[in-house]
Length: 97
Image (cartoon, helix red, strand yellow):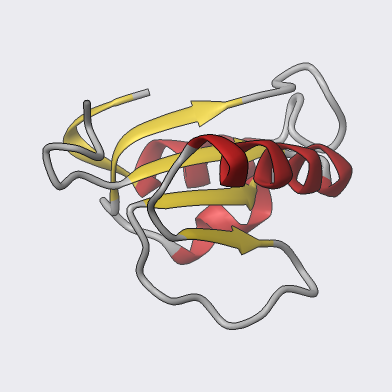
C-alpha cells in the first residue's frame, strides 16, 4: 500500500547475507525498482523500495514512509546506539517503523 501510494519503503538488516536474500526474493514479488545498499553496492538511485544494511541508513534523513528492520537481535545492530540513531532518523516524522 505504501508503495502504491507513492511512498518510500526500506527493509533493513544488520547482515549483508540477509539483505542479499531479501533482495532476491523481493525482486520476484514486486514490479517496482529495488535498490540494494551495502558497503560494496552500486551507487544509490531513488527507488520506491530499498533493501539495505542498517549501516547504510546513516545516509538517509527522513527518507522512508515505512522502515522494517529484520534481525534486530543480530550483531552489529544489537546495543549499537549509532545504528539505533540511523533507524530513528531515516524514517519520516509521520512514517512507520
